[in-house]
Image: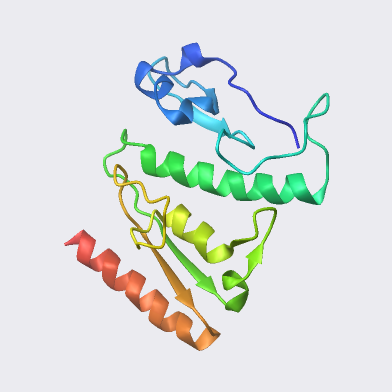
Length: 163
């Protein structure tokens, strides 16, 4: 896994450069735009990776697991932070099964809590909720037959927001 750094922050607009997603590698299509082509594997405050080696991070379970979790949250945050489009994006996540309630990974965190952060779910159990971004929602299904209810709730929410 290679650690990424910005190719050229000069290609990013001042608005993007001032935002947390400026830490992404970008390729400018015009001087006024910046499209992400990659994201960092680690940002301050996220799960740590093993010490970098020349050319990247060690290829081991710890670094791969933490990098995957970091990337999912970093990309979701970048999506919710993007205000340049016509409409901001709201994220909904669905989780299935009791393994989401078990502590795993280097922090022994629950998969459900990761999905709550990705969605920016305002539930009181989500201590990382960002009120400056659109809230989404995490839906949990204990068993496969409960997925229909979860998908129906997402459908109802999307219909409500589109009216």
